[in-house]
Amino acid sequence: MLALSDGMGSGGKAKEESAASVELFEDFMEAGFERDMVLEQLNSLLLMKAGGEDIFATLDICNINLYDGSAEFVKIGGMPSYLITEEGVRMIGGGGLPIGIMDSAESNSTELRLSDNDIIVMVTDGVTEAAPCLLGKEKWFAQVIEKYSDLQPDKLCDKLLDCLLYTS
Image (cartoon, rainbow, N blue to C red; front, side, top):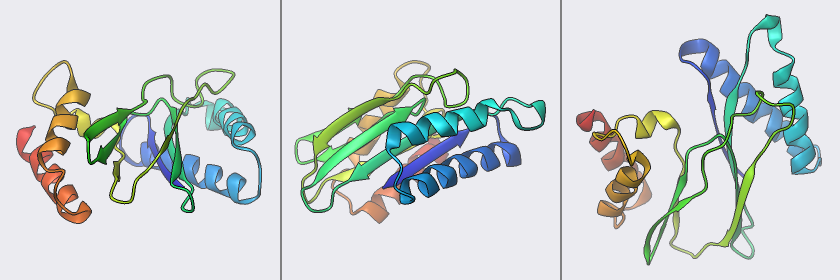
């Protein structure tokens, strides 16, 4: 399982929200609960508003079956993920409301089969906010990924980070 969460706002409070969301999700899943039930419980916990404050977070999950290569991407308010394949870069899902806003957690899910050399890139909106354009930020980032898609994952990450730091 790959999981990424982005707490609303900035600083320590947002960091706590996102860390708590991932940790709770992981704990419930390891305990053997079904994903949809875990998402509803996590949503209910965030709705309780600790200390009367609004607590929201995106939740971006990718479950990969290492035996058959199947992958399920689950998005709750998260940005698109990017899949680098031999055919190019594919954007997967994205959008929707963060968890903890509505009475029910609404997720969108995409299932696909991965190949041996595919690379998954998962990001928060902070990455696409560095785009030098006002519209089409996700597509711009897909083009940047495409430009460096022949690199090994560690070098790809370095190039993407450099590009984001020096573009904004």
